[in-house]
Structure formats: C-alpha cells, structure tokens
Image (cartoon, rainbow, N blue to C red; front, side, top):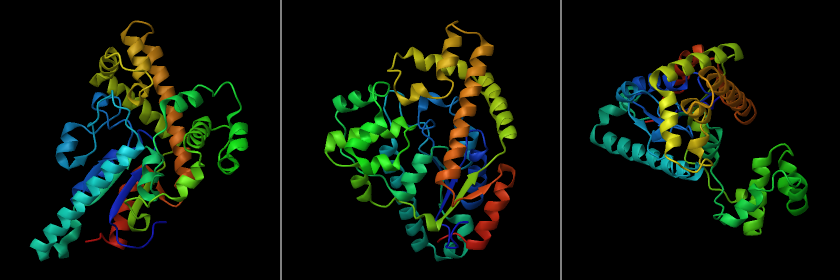
Length: 328
C-alpha cells in the first residue's frame, strides 16, 4: 500500500485499454490537476488515433501535457521524456507556490485548487525513471550500437556479457536480449559496467512515498473485450488512414513511432497486401501480447503500488485522497 504521507503526485499505470486516461481525467477535474502523459506512443503527433490519445474534448476538460508534441521522425527516448516531465513538475510547483503567496485562502482549499501532477500511461520504464532516476550513460557511438544490435542471433549474448561484465550478467535473464545488448553496448563504449553507472544515478523528480501510485489490474477476459472494442472504434475514427499516412512518409522503419501497435498491419491493409480481417486480427493479437507484457511488468516491478480493478479504481483513489490529503 502507498505511504501515508500527503499526496504531491498521482501516478496511474496499467495495460493498454484498461481505462487509465478516464481515471486520470476524473481525478484531474476533481483536484484541478494536470494530466501528464507517461506513454511512449502518445508523445507522437502522428499517432493520435492508434495510440488512443485523449480526444480534443477530453483535453479541453483538464490541462494535459506531453501529448502529441513529438514528430514521428524523432527517435524519442526515456531520457528526453524524463527531462520534460521534470520541467512540467517544476513549472506546476512554481505556479502553485506563487499562487499560495498571493492568496492564503487557497491553502485551506487545496483539494479544489492544487495544480497536482497526474502522470498516466503504460510505459513502465517511464514510471521507473520518474521515481528512481535514470542512469546518465554517455552517448553510445553508432558503430558500437549497430555491432551489438546486429549480433543478437549470432552469439550467446548472456555468455558474452558474463565474460565481460559478470555483475550485470547476474542481474539479467538470458531471455532478455534487449537489456543484454544494452549492457554490452555500455561496457564496450565506456569501459565501465552499466551497474557502475546505475549506482551514480540521481534520484527521480517524484518521491514515491509522497505519490498516490495506482496500477490498474483488469481481468484478462474483460481486457481482451476492451481491446477488441477499442480497435473497432479506432478503425471507425480513421486508424487505417493514420497508419497509411505515417508509412507514406518513408521514415526509417526502426523508429519507435513506426513500431507502434497497428501501424504495420493497417498500412499493409491500406496497400491491399492483406485484407481487413487479417489486419484487425494481427493488431488485436499484438495488442493483447503487449498488454500481457505490461501486466507482467506491473506485477513484478510495481508490486508496492495500489493494484486495483479498473471499475473500483476511482473509489479507491478517492479513499486514499481523503485519508492522506493533498500536499499544499
């Protein structure tokens, strides 16, 4: 359960299609909060429909930040997001302090006036960086990165890491090639273990003890149904055309935006390479697999969060807010 300290930040995580955005909006409207995106796909302006970004009317109902502000051609990553998120937090803190100095009465009514940061999204790494910080590793040269990214199927990455960096090898599973390649890149480029860099990590901008941390935990059957229903709604809203426009830009297919759920199969349908049923089924299955990975992360890496079913989340959040109060 969350710590009993006053709430200075609200964090809402959960698998895709679990109702995170609706919960964040409800809380923002009650608390005068700002909804801040913590989803790696929703930063891209090219992916309004496919990333299920809040609709314009939802964005008008409460202040939103870090949504749709990045072009798909940009290789946006967690380090940039963390810097931008920290900037939003500092701006809200400054604004709130200035407002309280001007009007002492607002202190007595903080539940309705606080510009509370409310982070919401499905990217676990973003939340981890927000609360635990991010190792500041020097930029990896392109040649080093390409060498290890191309070696995944040719060598035993875990055995190679064990030979060169046994500390990191002991922390990582042999079945986790992305993190294994990252650890090998770092020691190859810097001569130091990633573990050394992580020990020097500065704390994140959010103190987890003063945050209300909610992890939505829908049952598998209801989540599958929500995924299917949302996909049909996306198609009615123009998801196929959005995917087609993005792919038509001729960008590097390795860019994160081009790997977003639905982009490849829906663009293939638009080109006549597959039919609608195939495109929909591929997108649905990819989304279900992604949701399963998100749920696994939540259980394993966010075990100390408040895990709650989506239909009970708003009441649970209200209860915690009443119990702990909002920091003013």
